[in-house]
Every structure is written in structure tokens, then in C-alpha cells.
Length: 471
Image 1: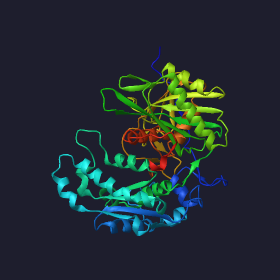
Image 2: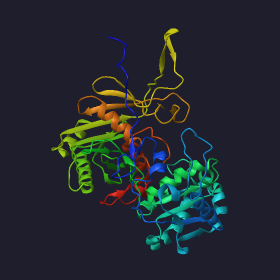
Image 3: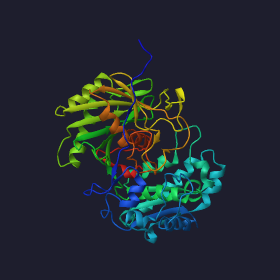
Image 4: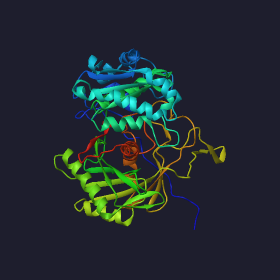
């Protein structure tokens, strides 16, 4: 027995493509690529993007000023080694943003604020007031594309519930998503008052374009016949002593990383172990079958040659059997558990001729480093130093010792190359932030978002949902 671990393998930073035909228009930096080439779906989103507004009485102008700011250029004052100048929404996306008609501009009467200040449940009161104000906009849904909701800092007591699982952001998303209404929450402290205006403009501009139906970028150099499925569960009470489980994924991503729709439904056919739900063979068969139907619908009836399924918990034997039963014609099926919370850490050590023992490097371990822990497990550093982004090494966040995720293979064989490359590439497909990457593949990070919001929805239909309503 030896204490030595396997040699480190390194995978380069995945590239993104910004045009459906001109595949030479690519970059590893998402924002730099957008600025150079424009969005992947240029010309396919109706211009202008019409924005409805909801604000406290007399404060709509703050949202209108924010929309005007989106069209102005500004330089970053933070993360200057990563953030490009913001040249304006029109320049980046080749389209305009405008306020919707007057009937799509709602102001909330402030008479409830004194009551909220005295209330023991201010979050319930605020949520009711906002939902009541949104309801009339349903009649004018065809007159706007995205709804901006302004939340001033003085309402902060109502953003979260004391002692319960309430989150105003997720509550509003659940209500509006069920009605096919994409929203952008504009908080005073995080959007209007944040010091780096370039950072705000990139984040909100990118989210606004995606919520209006745009595709900013896709993945380059991936297997066109592979489908990626993310599975997660949301748990909520049904009012009795027994919990009810909502299976909120499958979200299916194709080879280019596009996963614009997902399926969700309630099920009680689960087993619970250590607070984690596990599906029966029949339910896993149902999930994967519906996922493949969604994939074929988006790909002209064609089935994928290979399917890679991600989830945060282990695959029980019944779940493995359900997956294989649903995928009898696939040449390869990979069932990968993605474990986020691991105890491993890694430091980067450099050879030094003057010191036989070497020395600690100036930067941490490189993103894309993988260490095998055997045939079934490996550590993959999704977070770490990136040396190919520019003239200097880039380390997102600039602090801390990067920790890896642990990949556990419950089905599949061969090297870790495909699984590692897929996880790294899918970490760059979150259109709701301005970072170089996420710490998780989008199959897992989107699943978390969906789980939070879906458990607050009272009715789950049988038709697929568009993810842009949940962003």
C-alpha cells in the first residue's frame, strides 16, 4: 500500500463560440467574446426589448434611469484583469432596450410600509403586495418582454422570512414563472448603489438578453451526439405529516450546452435516506424517458448517441436500472455523481534548482487539474488559476485555496477525459452571471435554482418550462 496519489492531468480552458456558422468566432472569455463578435443569436431576438416596470410610488424614474444607463459605456473599477469595458447594451447585443407602454408601468402604493414596519411577518405582507401589483400586468403580457421589479433597501425586512424557508426572490420567480413572465429584480443595494457600474451592466445586460429569449454563446468543440442531463429534487410539505417530493429536473443540455427547457413533476415514489430522496426504477425511467423526448423534440427527432447524467447524490441500483431501461439504444451511458463539499485541497508546487524540495508557486493549482482516486472516483478542480486568459495568470476571486469537486462514476467506463471536459465546459454556460465560470457544471447549478423555485409553485403542469423564467 502506498500513500502516493495518481499523477495530475490538466485540461485546457474550454472555448465558446459566438456565431452559428462562423466557428472561428470563438474565445475562452465570455464577455470578451461578446464584445468582439456579438451574441450567438444575433438578429433572432426582437428589438427593442420592451421592459415593464414595478416600483414604489414615485420611484419609477430610478428604473428608467437604470435602463438608460444600460445604453451608456463605462469602465470597470474592480476585477480589471477580467472585466472588459462595458460599451453599452446596443453595441454588445446589436439591439435596444426601451420602456414598455404606460399601461405596463406599475407603482406600488406605499401605505402598507408603516404596517410592514410593525408586522411580525413583514415578508408575507410584502410578497402579497407585490403579487397583487403584478397581477394586472398579465392582461398586457404581449406588450412587454421582461418585467423590472425595483426593491428599495428600506424593504429589507421583507426579503427573507424569520424562522421559515421564505425567500422573496424565489417567491416572485415562482409566481411569475408559472405565468410565463420573465422578471429582473433590481435591488437598490446590489444594482443601483453598487460601485462598479461595469460589473452591474455586464451582469444585468447579459441576464436581460437571455431572459428576452437570446442565446449569448454556445460551447465549441464538443461531441454533437452527446446529451447532458441534470437531475435534482425539491422537497416541500403537503400539509400533512409526510413530505412531498418534487423532481425538478430534468434539465437537458445538448452538445453545445443549450438547455433552454426542462421538465418538472411531483412524485411520491421515492425512498428517503439521510434526508436525501432516491427514485424508484419506474420513476427514474420516467424522468429519463421524458428528458429524451425533450431532447428529440429540439433535435428533429434524433436521439443522442451518448447520455451523461449528473446528480449530487449517489445513484442507487434502482436508479441505475431505470436509466439503462430508458436508454436501450444509447452506445454509452455515464452516470456521474457530482460531490461539491469535499475535504480535499491542493497546493501548487514548483521545481526550484536552488532548492531540491521546490517551492510554493505564486498562484494556486490550475483550473482543469484532475487527480484520479481509482477507477470510480476523481478530483476535478473547477476553480483555480487560468494561464491562457490574458498576459497574466487569472485567479477568479483572487483569494482562498481552491477545493475540487469529486466525481463518482456509477456507470460508464474508460478514462476521465470526457467527464472532466464536459464538467469544465458546462461550468461556462450560466448566462445569469458575468464570471469566467461557475464552481459547478450548469447541470448542477441550474438544478439548484430550479429546486428552490419549484418547491414554491403550487401547480406543476405537464409541459416543459423555459429556464429563462427562473433566472
